[in-house]
Image (cartoon, rainbow, N blue to C red; front, side, top):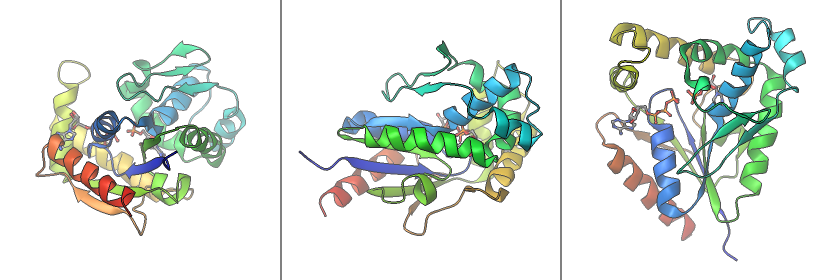
Length: 226
Ligand SMILES: Nc1ncnc2c1ncn2[C@@H]1O[C@H](COP(=O)(O)OP(=O)(O)OP(=O)(O)O)[C@@H](O)[C@H]1O
Ligand SMILES: Nc1ccn([C@@H]2O[C@H](COP(=O)(O)O)[C@@H](O)[C@H]2O)c(=O)n1
């Protein structure tokens, strides 16, 4: 049997991690795991269960309670908490604003990293895992590590385009919110957002999604042939 291909894709918000990871996994017949969705699911549960998300001790005490289950099909990446499909509610502004505080708590990370490693270990052909600390902490022996970047302007424009008609707040506010979340994610003590020393950096500012996908598929082919 062939060795499973493990691909770690990290980077700041709005650089294209989810779109790229799903497309790469679908193209190569690999599983896909959105670890950001798991931190969002944990945050959604805390907000719905009266946990003060600004109090790390309270968050730590509650971290073991929700049962989070992630699907790994890139064509239908579902996520549930205690049996309830939360794919939509984890994307609200309320969750987005609170997720960095929850994800900074070591007990939360410990719990979710365990789920993430189990998903990778169970992927027979291999998996594309996206997040903030996959290459540095979760899967340090990944076959290929990618660190996606893009200018703040491009990321804000992409995210703002997505929010139109839903919870749109305007370009400047979107940009500010992205910068704030990236600063919190990069500045936390446990497993901050960071590029692994052996990651390949791909700046997506001037690339189409198809071009980014092609580049990564080529890199995977080269690594797998080694
Ligand atoms: N190379 C690209 N060129 C233009 N738009 C892109 C590109 N890659 C992704 N997008 C668009 O940018 C938006 C954000 O992409 P995506 O959700 O994949 O980013 P992300 O890094 O996973 O964000 P987050 O970390 O906030 O979840 C989406 O609307 C997506 O369609
Ligand atoms: N490996 C990860 C992945 C995500 N986070 C935290 O979750 C937030 C939401 O992530 P999205 O990719 O859905 O935007 C993110 O801002 C981080 O706070 C993380 O800590 N580690």
